Image (cartoon, rainbow, N blue to C red; front, side, top):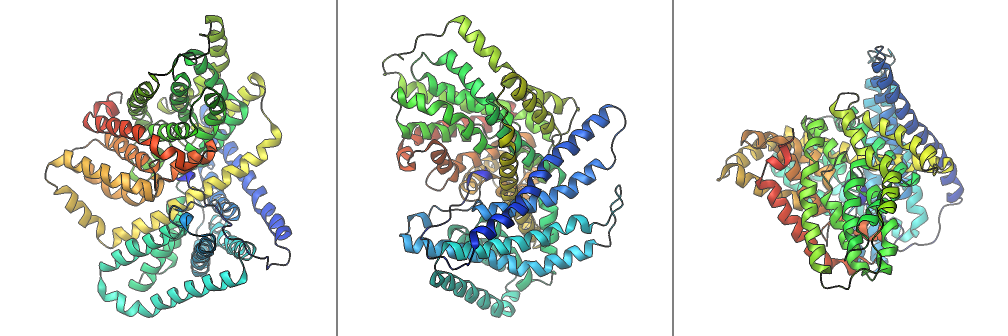
Length: 623
């Protein structure tokens, strides 16, 4: 899951070389965060109004158009906030092992590389936006410039915050060294342009493997790694105008289906704030707390249920871990085993609707999201059985739990308290399957449901926290959506080069047909999941491999489940899986303590994945 790999800034901080950066950042930050919070709330209102109006027989013809206009502003402002907070997704497995001074330089280099892309793209972004000014929207009948202006304004703000970040976090020598190195690399490639053009598709290896790989493993945010390599490929090896990159990023990141991403993130944060997740955990603990390893079973079940509500793995783990870890530690569980199980359950629940990865697959491949939501429940349950077996093996020799078995009255009371929370996944699924709301709109029903339950049933709705939650939603959404935009532009470049046709021919011609194709896909997406995470990997390769799956006779829903579980396995597997480190951070446990115990859980997940791949009925039996 993309939202799990937030970057950490500040390695090797140096002297301050900006006159009043704190005050400047606070003022400018508020000028971005307040509108971003308003945009999240406005999207909820607009989509909810569309549902209600359609139910009353007077559909709002302009609601989707307005939502689309606001969505690009939300995505760009969210990306700005994520940059300001240092929350853009990046791979830090290698640079985190460097000495402090080298780590500080690597962090400055990563920031400078992102800044270089922003400076290169600002002029094309302005040209693209001015070109949109002549287009009039169909329903609102306003200039598309009102929407397109979000891109150059967002880029400009990111340039400002990147500069401030460099000057605040590093000494002048470090900054100048990073700028000189990035500048030198840029000049070398620019001078090499005439020699690159005759190389043909060898440039795909240079830009989309070598440059992307070097940038990602150097700690450059994934979105900027993708975008910088695509910009270089288009500018130096083709005659395609560079503003095309902006258009493709816009097309990729502002698809209306993806509006479900910020809304489900917001829903997940509300679930945690209102205490609904804690109510589910208490109910499960009442059922199983008295058995050996009972709270480990509770952790598996709670992640399964919570994932069916929020769709965001960070929100899932943040909702469950604080409620269970203190008691589990008090009962003698080792911190490393706790974080290992938490990470494993994160991988297990990747297919549980409303998974953001499933929504992304529907967006980029055209596969039915309602079908993906229906097909995702049972594969997660199969993997849960494997984890339960490992927990049983590890706890069978322990002394019986100290807790007394909860009485029927206590269990019934906790069930009644948890019932509104337990019902929410079914409310969401019912609304999608029955056509009451689309996959994009249904999150608003969940948001209203959660707000009402939190205010009147759980009485834990903290209005003062709503502003911070809205800003957090915008930040996480922006970090995800800009990756989708950059990956969409890269995927377009690969397609235009003819790479997709070559890949299709190679994979279609594999001996062994569908079985070999599934095995190759599992290996490929485990690797991609550990390096790129789910969303960028899907956006890059989904449009290429799903048609191949169809051509070799693999059902697209079944293939989606195999792909998502494979990426989840890679995402939460050390040493590169960033989901594992996110689980350690949420559980406040040293990652080194969880590396050894996680392998047993990963083996169980691998067996479960093999079962799901071998038995298509698990994914499509209830369609």
